[in-house]
Image (tube, rainbow, N blue to C red; front, side):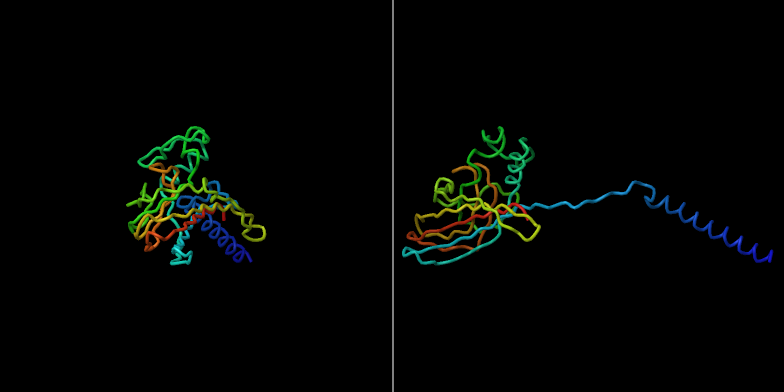
Length: 220
């Protein structure tokens, strides 16, 4: 019996030594004894845009229908930050201009409600600050024409809602051309560009009209 007790005692000492050595080794290589990071449920609220372009002929018949998601550019993101937090953005692509209704920072008072069209198919990029080749047709202010609305759309039980801003206006063409690019601005000329996208090209004559609907979704 003394032999058995001695055997078990030695085994206990060996196990305890191995466990202790393992913990000591782990403490040197892994943060076992550091405070753990606690996570919580965080709701991600994206902001995305979508463009729908419909071309009509002189009789009001649809010639073409195109739609695509847009590219929100760096300046647009900087302007958003300025408006939300009343700060002046810096860097190589700051938000230019002063809006009195935005605490002295950000885009012009009217917001990003000016629609511009262009004739170049250069792909959209976040570094762009203007249309590559803006068409001769003057930018249209959707607010002035009653084409800006805000609605809320339910996204499922318990998921809340998202705000949908729709900016709509219709261009009367000044002559035949192919429209490839679209931009959303805060001024009739120059100003800040919030977003840009190309759609593959819409061939138009001087008697055609082009309806542009820019939808911005805020929320999931």
